[in-house]
Length: 549
Image (tube, rainbow, N blue to C red):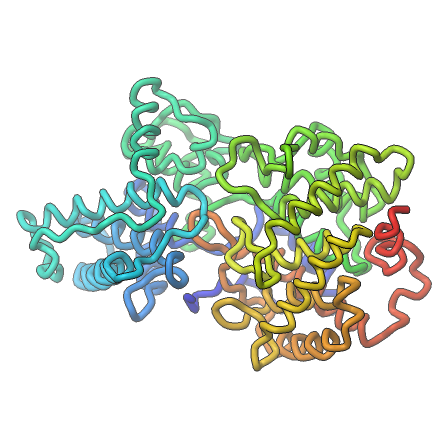
């Protein structure tokens, strides 16, 4: 995987680290997320008028790996490598004014072309991962890169002579050019784009400029590249959106994040990670009130401008309940299907972790409303069956929101552990076995080498589930994991979360690490819950919910 982890700016966390995480949520109200190779490349191509081009080019050049690839490994490299390479070719073709020497841009573009060729021409070509709109983005970018290659024979670029002989890139497996063609035809005929495609508007080409859409605070669907495509070149007269792009690029030194702002998701997940394990934190009242007001109006999305989804909504309900501010989670019924809950109607792939969060929201409701929970209990049984059915053979879970199975396995295990059900217990035991079996020699866990975030998720499985805590191996493995966590830079966050490429939400990564350290402290101090009573995160509270009381 790429070694370009996101390190959030700022000084080391003070002694009250959990409170510092929450303070950061108010100090950085738009959120902290890593810059995106994919979106930075799209902004280079789509908005030559935007200040900060040199910063964007420097970010792209610095992010390229020695083998010419951008991004993580395998299929995760396809979209960022295509986007960065296409952007460099565009700058060279347009002869944009830049302090970066053209020879350096051409050399990087040539390495990028070789990398894409290797990814797509080998016997087992890299398949696109389940990131947002990958099936549409890949054919759009391949067509743009191939158009550059077609022009090289007649309009050569110094340093790219080897690519002027008519070579063309094939589509990576998982591409859907027919779906892209249908979406573009719909835009041509109707002058409009389905709302679910606003987030990926940049795949629509020049027709995206000024199409009917509804930005929120200047951002279209919280997507920087979609906002850039909607503004176009020259930009349409939308001062709020222009200001949004300018401010975002300035904050990142020219580069841009992908999904921004994403403060709804970041706040809910960070607060939830801390209170779930019983850390005594002072959650700023403004954050609680914002969450309460949002949920009072119905289902919510990850941030303003994103469609309401079951994942954000259920996580919000569970977090409020653990903060002692429960609300009836009945707006989740709009996401109910025959055998599981969808994130939103018409989604392409279901999410195990979204179902786990719905299960948690209902379990928290049942624990406080035993006499009014018949439908909720039935839904819990449904979700338990579905989660057990989609558990992988090795005992882990995979999910469309995160590259690592440790994220999905942690969230599914913790939710199932709340339910007094033999099937749920079997599934959690299998997850514990898988977690124990996949620890690295240095005490870490991770799919591409050990990371603090993934190690934290593994510790949650081992020490925050009943089957994990009852296994003496868990304590030993978690102790080794703790040593790894303490040896790592707490502000280094490799991108593992899915958007159009991978990103790292800094506050969430900090929170899950601190929660894991709290669990290891509690495991070595049996009286850690003494005197707390059945509050959120305590052992008594979890026993009550497992008993259905």
